Image (cartoon, rainbow, N blue to C red; front, side, top):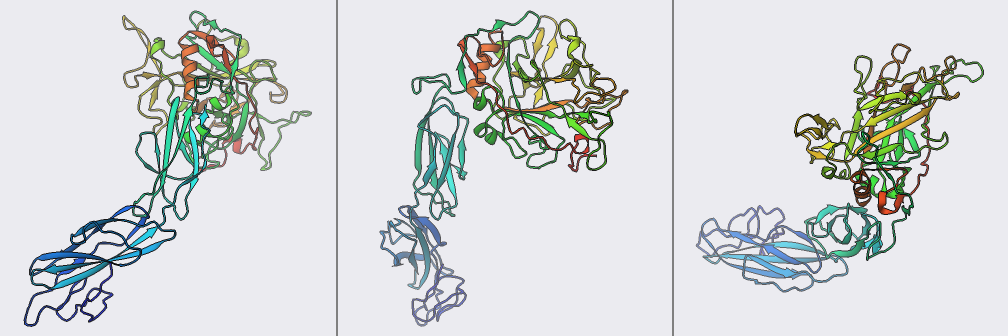
Length: 576
């Protein structure tokens, strides 16, 4: 506010000195009539404002009088483009800010008169900025099969924006803005600029349509990662999986990151091997996974989920002498063991999506962004894990839950040319609310087996929502470049997460665990549930049941392989 002495006595900047007839803390006083002891009233024109052009603006005035009452108000404009006040004789008035090409200052004065004729005046400044339309520089295609929309936008002299998806409320946002996940059908995003005082400009609006990945009336074509198939899967075997999809994945990259346990912390974890989203790092979250990157798994952009486990390591030996190689620090060196399943040169069917409960109709798709950890990274001798959750076995054992449940809690000595296999089963009962929890486990539970009339495999009451069960299944060839040269076996192998030294009496691998974050295209994952699991089919190679379709093939990631540091434990401060 600015203060002016209407009697021409003095221009006040502090608001503490009156004019002739007293003092006031703000506004202007006018000397009362001779012989009168009446104190002049105080006017308050309100705080200065920053607004956009073309907006209805309110001037909120008031007046106070210590020894009388306010009898009248009078608003006048003293500078700037002329505007029309709604009622110049009221305490509160409104007007529409003028259209301006550059910022313009409007100044208004409020004069209040008390019941004995004394007056006080105050001024207020309104800074009018030109309406700055939001320019959308990136939008989705008008018809797309992506279940999200990414928008980039800008506006001159504006740093604050609000975005609105469909019928939701406006929310603070910034460029780029991702709208996700989106159902099939029409969608609309509105973006507007916002001034520091909360005044908003006109919204820019974009409409587009999300089409089915299998084709619909808005786009009859299929998503490029949905391919035709003439193969109809067989029904599952009795006493086996209730319904299952098996997908192939190539190795993506390796690193000392873990966006679930150590989000935003580069190099804080033990060495992991990553599959799925090729851009995964310590900063990955549901938005980046769902909307960016390719996938090393079948389905590519339909399956940007992230899969990782601690690297399996073998002692590094000189091939000619069999002597242990030392690393740059003079410590025994280790090397990562690559996984192979099926043909030695082709990794396939590493990840399964299946039913964890008997009632197939009760199973729900996994919610987008759900984070899971299976197994215990602290597992060690005396803390052996349940082999129904994580386990090891030699392929030659021909282990089977139904006929030959021969499993190991640690890495067995598998002799060349055998393969070491590991299985990791994730919980498939959800609390129905949380996508994560403080320990990354409590929001999920494993099914339980009940006996009696209400028997069968069901979810516990604490976690009543059955979801698709995820499991990892790896095989590692016992080959000359990684086996123990003396025994030609997997002796001495360990996980990067093992917090103990592997030996003949205490084999490695007891800390077996894995992480998974869901970033599937919702329609694709629903198809997995409907066409394979609920139909009780054994779908291999990304086949989607009787639909006549399958997921596209695998692709490599960056294949980055960092050095094995501190037996794979890395250099994070939490490591021994």
